[in-house]
Amino acid sequence: MFPGMFVALIIQLIIGYFVYRDAKGRQMNALLWFILVIIPIIGFLFLVIYVIIRETQHPDTLPAGKSALQILDERYAKGEISAEEYQRMKEDLKK
Image (cartoon, rainbow, N blue to C red; front, side, top):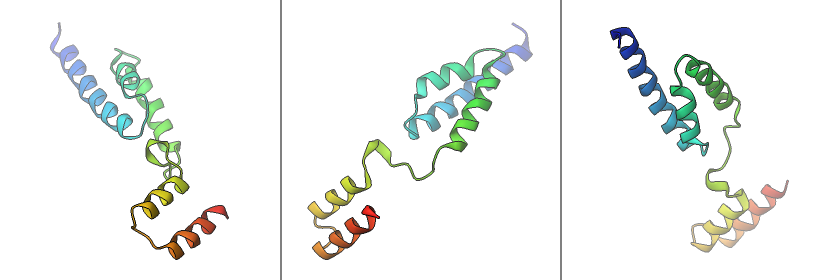
């Protein structure tokens, strides 16, 4: 194996690792993106595609698929907010 090829492989693995961590944090299919990014020669194309998809995602998406109303219900159930705050916030969410 040529030294340049070895360096390119190491760089692809490092990039793949960072893509994996980022995709996992964004609730995306992390393993799939890791595999696509480390494919020789076309991996960089998949890296560009991943960055485009990543940047076009809505930044206000909620983690773990919980709706805003479910989070509000949990906060009220835990006693973090009062009944008045709960009703006001619930009305705001319905708008």
